[in-house]
Image (tube, rainbow, N blue to C red; front, side, top):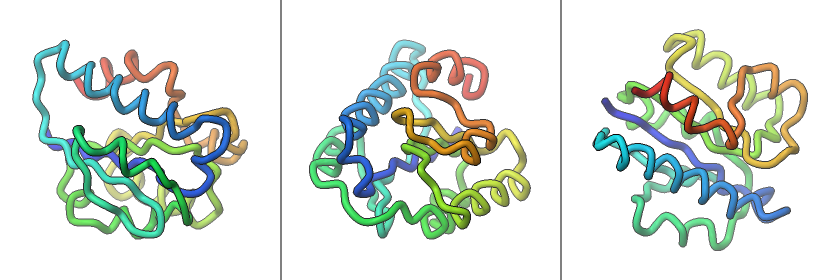
Amino acid sequence: MHLCILCDASGSLREGGKRFALLTTLRTIEQYFWVRDVSPEVSLFAVNDEPLSADWSDFRHLLDDPKGSFALKKALSHPAVQTADRLLILSDCCWGSDQRRAFRNLKLTRGSDFARAVVIGAEADKQCRELDFVTAENILGHLEEWCP
């Protein structure tokens, strides 16, 4: 299985410890696969104005200076996303209408089970929450049913 993970690295991650919560969620995902002795192919990206490829060992440094905006639409066109079996987006989900539309269209195009967004922090607006997002607190249970 090829799992693509897009991590929000925009300026809004500077607020309220969200970048640390995102890193904790990312490490939880890594530990989930380790404990289950599963080794999916993982493409990991930090996304602000551009998607930047990363790996588990150096990802922490990509969030040292979150800035810009979360270019979700641009990231969704990346070849790694296009070839992935599953897509996980870790974000504070303070998305504008273009980002919400891109996520909704992606789920329509690739199937409702292809992509999930995990809310980091408590600021996601009501319109984003209606897109069937998962909270970071529930990530382990969600992975169990979505990414066995």
